Length: 431
Ligand code: EPZ
Image (cartoon, rainbow, N blue to C red; front, side):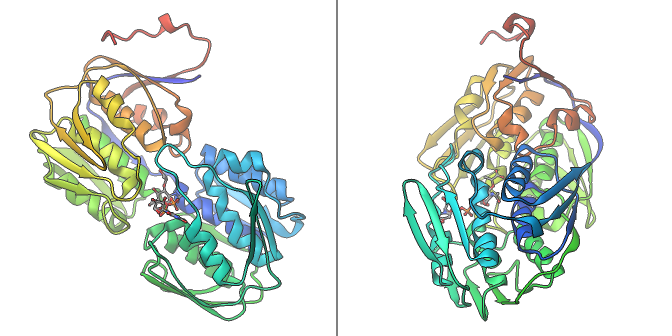
């Protein structure tokens, strides 16, 4: 299994372009199936989760070509709406196929997505929304089969502003008969991207990015071209990398307005963050200060996806910081791995108390999920000595060759491929 090996202590410096957003691209790739023409999508990030979604499109019969971030899909050759179980199990986000396939073809069959290490992640809000639009839903033997003659617009009020449920219901409503109003909708920037993409194809969606979205059903969607927005979670991770290493990094191609909550907390830590609409620069000025409280919340609150990376920063901040994870029930898997590196963290249910230490020490650690893996990379960049991170495949789901991005900013980080004897990789700190 591949590992990342990091020699810590190197301040990062330089500038980097942020790649396209995973969480915008995945629902957009599902929505492509609704078009009655060829679709071109640019700035599609080269990530394992995206490659799985492309395999799903091919398995349904669509013609797919993907080269250097540009994707060309002809969905007119789709011949089945039965999503292969082995692909469903590879990635939860394949649940996004339900709304588009159901509303375009009148049927969809998926296997129930498993939970993951950050929580059970049920899909009850998705199913409730599709049922409200008139879907017949049959759940048995671990599969979910939905059918309809034609979905009918209605009012859907989400129990929680779920990103995925908002996206699934919005996509299903695009080709439904009549108007749909989604109340208590998620407001994440990825929802805006998806709506902008669908409107490019001829959909009639208004209010995306607000808590009420109105969709007027249309009879069909044409082909078109779209470019995916930059990944705000990758951008936030790189800002934190600059801060934790005491460096200075400039990000190009970012949407600063999508990172307000994170920028405010970085400034509270004593990190200088300056920028314009699409450029951001982070620079550590002096020592880091603890923040009184971080509470994750739906957008525009502090993003749960940057909770783990930010915790790594706070392990080196003077004082004690309190982090509450309110979105997922089990998103502190990175804590025990950070403790192996010398972090002082206590967890009480969904709150972590992080007492800053003078330094972290390199260790052999394991990524448990995508953002926990990113947090360990950040800690390794700051730690004294070398850190070995196992199960790098978690990180590859959401970051395009993160080690290359960081090496370009001066980090001493290598990807070690399988076959290297354990002894070949020295860990200067005994673990
Ligand atoms: C999206 O997941 C993102 N994934 C997640 O990013 C992100 O953490 C999350 O939104 C919150 O911002 C993609 O966009 C592909 P939710 P999603 O539905 O849609 C519960 C990453 O690291 N819930 O907003 O699954 C759920 O269990 C990933 O890039 C239900 O109970 O998130 C969770 O506690 C991780 N029933 C809460 O709502 C449902 O039907 C928020 O989930 C749906 C969700």
